Each structure stands twice: as C-alpha cells, then as structure tokens.
Length: 242
Image (cartoon, rainbow, N blue to C red; front, side):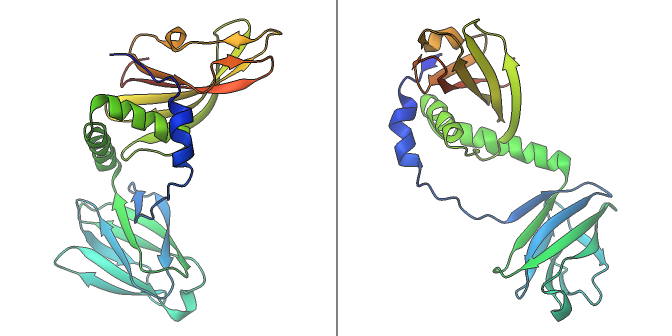
C-alpha cells in the first residue's frame, strides 16, 4: 500500500521541537583486540557487563580503579582511585570465550553509569529485533507516519541505524536532487533527499513523481519551489528494495 503523506511535516513538526532526549546506559560494540572508549563516574561505581556473556578477567586496573566482581552475574563494578578521578585510563577485559577488549575509561562528574559491551553479531541481531518490534508495535500506517516524524526531527527509532551522505541523483534537468540520509530498520528503510530548483521558473512537485518499486510512502515539505529554493523529501521503502 502506498500512502501519500501530504502536509505531514507541517502538522507534526511544531509538536516535536520540544521532545526530550532520554539518557540511556552506554552500549559499546566490541571486537577481539579492538579499543573502545566509555565515560564513567569519577566518584560512584560503574557497572560493567557483557551482554549475553560474562566478564572473565580484567587486567590493568591496579592503582587505577577498585574492582568488585559479581561472580553470580559475571558483571564487575569499578570505581576510579583518587589519582584517576580526573584523567582517563585503560584496562583489558576478557570474556568467557577468550576474547580480549581494551577499554579507555574517561571519568566525569556524573552519576553511576552502566557500560554494556556487545559483540557485533549479537548487536546486529538485537538491533534488527528492536527495529522490527518498534515497527510492529503500532498500526502499519501509524508506523510510516512515526518513521517520517523521526526522520524530520533527526531522531533514530529504536534498533535503527543512520548513515549521513551526500550523493547526487539524476532526476530532472530543472532540479538538483541529493540523497542526504538513510535510515536502516528491520522491515523498513527511510531516505531523506534535498531537492533544489535550479531553473528560472517555479517547480511544482507531487508525491507520485517519487514513487518507485518498493516505495511505501512519500512526504514533501514544500510542494512548490521558487528559483533557487530547496526542500526535503522523505521516502519510506521496504527493506531490501533499491
């Protein structure tokens, strides 16, 4: 089903300008031998865990941080020593499978943190599962509206990833079309284009002109552009479609 989302942006955007961003625990994708950086509390314990696994051993913390392992859960609580409350330090974490990760920890004056290490194959599977869950948690048409709303305000739905790019696409002689962002979900993908009128006459556009195979919905911020004007176009398509 193709759904024109005419006037969606003008209706939804004012109400979205004041949506707060929630603070979440730090989730870091790790690989054997890789180095990752995390922010930790300078004065309170930080919980360190491996999603779907256990912390087997930690090296390099002597004189830098106090470690309190939880043998039942496989997690570790750490707190910087006095001399390392204002400067970064590194340590090595080994999981139960034998992989070793290097963590660079940056203490800051913040409350207790939870740092979760996630291996890439598990991270991809979990992200897709979260994306599909978000996509199917509401009626189909509402999901398309919500995805466009997220894209219009620069927010990324749970489980989605976003690529920023600058790729010019051939369209019409009187317009310049540039692909600026792509959103990758479970069953849906989103694209944001910027179109500029490079002609000497007004440019009028309709959603139907941007449909292609696999496109489910189109939203245009401004349907008529004067010479030199530009606007954004939002496309939602089925995952896997070009």
